[in-house]
Image 1: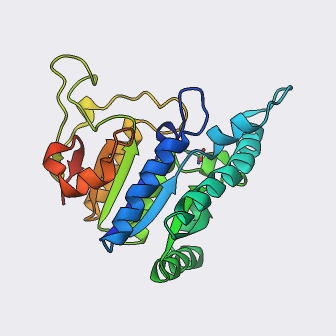
Image 2: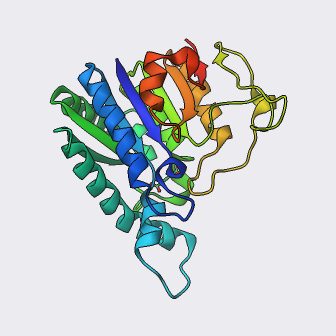
Length: 253
Ligand code: GLU
């Protein structure tokens, strides 16, 4: 299978905003396992801005664009450096793809980007994708990395997209409240909008609304989508080996 796995900032960072290296390492162990099983993996990773914010204390005001540019530039280096070190332990090669929404318009840039990721996969290199937050223009940005991962899954004709956040999936009410139930499977065309909250996550730009929108689009393109909790131990391996016992929401094709 060709899998696109999106890991959100909330999965990669602790509550104080620092990178959670233990969790990153656990996720990488599972990706290494996927590779050992013959699967191809493309990783879409947020966390650059959250990571950069922790690197540098700025003693004067920056506007939101300056903040995003400064912190993503700083943080992306650290993030990819960590991925490099952690994947190297498994003798796996990674490559960095920084992209923008306009690269997904039909045309040369789209074809070039797809060709780049194809040649990486053919040569056993794991593409690690993020938005190029340093140069992307606010009005033209991806809503968040959920949208980006959905576009990558479609571009690369993946078999499955796994969206890892800090919640088990889509619930029929507020998660944790008595009576709220996890929706296990979503057949094509089923409308879940009554269950979708619009709040955003603490460190990333996404939220359940954008995950749902992405999941629906990708499902319509004939690709399975799973929303699951990246804070659970062994989540990726469990989703593949014992899905019935692993909390998640699956958008079936
Ligand atoms: N590209 C942003 C980052 O790496 C994250 C966007 C998102 O939260 O989805 O920090």
